[in-house]
Length: 351
Image (cartoon, rainbow, N blue to C red; front, top):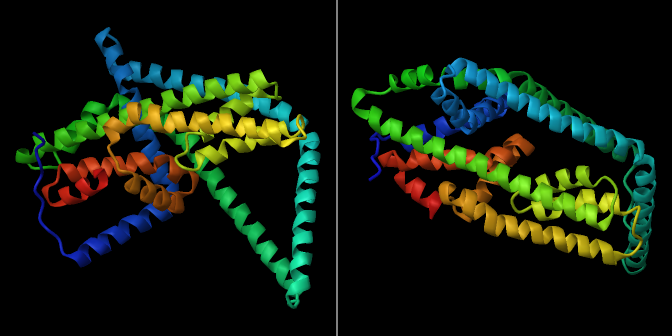
C-alpha cells in the first residue's frame, strides 16, 4: 500500500500566496528552471546506464562522464546531419519562397473578392490611418524579435549548462539523495524515499516512451516521404515526426513542413490530401496506441488535466512549456498521492 506523508494544513490565503510566488518565480527565472528540469529528466533517463557501468566495476564518476560524452556526441551527430540538410534546403529556399508567395497572393486575391462582395451590401467603414497600422506592425515585429531573443538565450543556456548539470547529477546521485533525505524527519524518510522513487519511475517512463515513439514517427515519416518522392525526405521526416508528437496540435503541425516541400511538386489538391491523411493516421496511431501503452500506464493523467497543463505551461514558457507540461504535472500527481492532505488533488488529476 502507498504510504502517505502528513503535513500541517495551511489556510487558503497562504496557499494562494505560495502558488503566486511559485508561478512568479517560474516566469521570471524561466531559463534557469527549464535548464534544471531538463537536466533532471535526462539524469533520470540515463541513470540506469551509469548503474550498469557500476556493475562492471567502472566508477560512478567515470561512468557518468562516459554517458554524458556519448549523449553529447550522439546529439552533435544528429545535429550535424540536420544542419547539413538544412543548409541544402536554405540554398533552395528561393524556389520554395516563390511558390509560397504565389499561393499567398492567390489567397489574398480571393479574400479581396469576398471583401468586395461584402462591401457592396454593407456600408463602408472608414479605414484606419496609415500611421496607426505602421505603429502596430512595428510593435508586433519588435515583440517577435524580443521573444525570439529570449528563446535563443534559453537554448544557449541549456546547451551550455545541461551537460555539466547532467554529469554532476549522475556522479553525485548518492550524495544528493542522502542530503535530500536529511531534510526530513527520520520518521518520514521511508515515505519520502517511496515518493522520490515513484517520481523517478514516472519521469523515466515518460522520457523513454516519448523517445521511442518519436523514433518510430520519424522513421515512418522519413520512409513515407521517401516513397512519395518529395525533396529532403530525412529533414522533413524528422521535423514532421517530432511535431507529430505534440499533443492535440501535432496532427496539424506535422502537415506544415510536408506541405511546404510538396508545393514545388504538385499543383493539385489530391496528393496533399493523401499526404495529410497519412500523417493524421500516424498521429492517431501514436496518440491512441503507442503513447497509452508506453507512457500512459505510468503517467496516469486524465485528458482534462493534460489539456489544462498544456495550456498553462505553454502560456508560461512557450514551446518548452508544452514539452515539460506533462512530466511536471505527472510529478505533481505523484507528490499529491503521497501527501495525505493533497490526495484529493491527486485523485482529480488521475480521474
